[in-house]
Amino acid sequence: MATIKTVAKLAGVSASTVSRTISGKGYVNDTTKEKIQEAIRQTGYSPNVLAKSLKMGSSNTIALLVPDIQNLIFPAITRGIEDTARKNGFAVLLCNTDEDSDVEKGYIDKLKNRWIDGFVVCSYTPGSNHIRALHSAGFPTVLVNRYEPGSPIDTITIDNYQSAYNAVGYLIRGGSKHIAIALGREELILYRERYRGYCDALKDTGLPYDEALVMRETSGSDSFYGLTKELFAKNKNVDGIFATSDPKAFVVLHALHDLGIKIPSDVAVIGFDNVDLSAKVEPPLSTVSQPLYEMGVIAATKLIRQIKYKVKNGVLPAPVCEVLNTDLIVRRSTR
Image 1 (cartoon, rainbow, N blue to C red):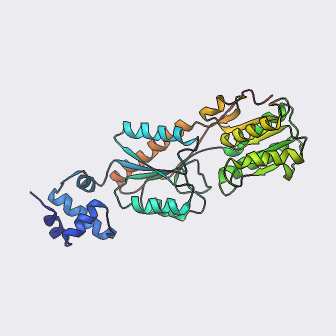
Image 2: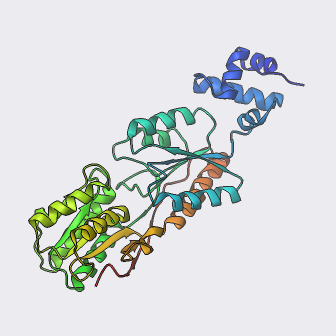
Image 3: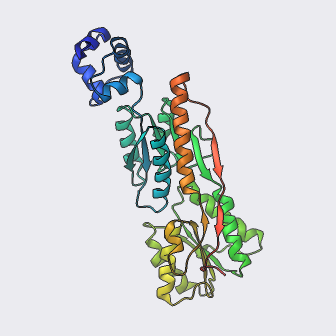
């Protein structure tokens, strides 16, 4: 029966190097890893699950990186990924990155040396070169809701521009003429695209753009409570608000209630996401519905396809950006 010493001798390395490679603890360069993997194949050495994973080049584990699982859109996405992974014999390792590029990079650096088969990244910040480097190094990778034009990575997204354009257009058709926006972090392209849709919807219907009606996120969604009160202290004529996410809309609704403003007769409010809570707040929130669970299913399906394709062909398949449709859900927060 082959032992760790047998593998070490065939690979021309020490037994401790073989042990580090199998456990994923400690640095071992890629060339040495390949020698050890080949030695394991030749000897049939397989003491445990980790060794089997090394032998097969697969651990049947995928990593899911999200900014914060408490963010209301991610439970549905995560469930879609997990359900699909489980049906295909894969486990999912969940990592919260707090939308911090350094935390994200730290997770990736640790996980890519521990036989993770692939990555689904929902917390991608533009300019994060470690994501592109991960894909360039041959790791199966899928981005969810973090589209960048020209990205070389499989991406699942929606048309944020058109969805926002449609939402603001609905407010306008309902009679709103002075429409404010609760705008998320502009370093994220999804919020820039929603902002662009807001601006163009105003322009195309002949309504003026007013910078004073733009509420910009300062410290998370909770910042919109104070921002909404400041907005109405200076702009009494606001009669519509487009929130670029449902959590922002919930805070806006709270502030409007506390100001004694009637919804939707005084101010119509529309959100973006259609998380479960949007149907349960008072009044129930009109919103853009993203197919969140479907995003997760498609992301996991694409990743597993990449993993299997690479095992068979030695390279990743050509990337595809899939843009999913959204729906406008009308409830009692709009006219």
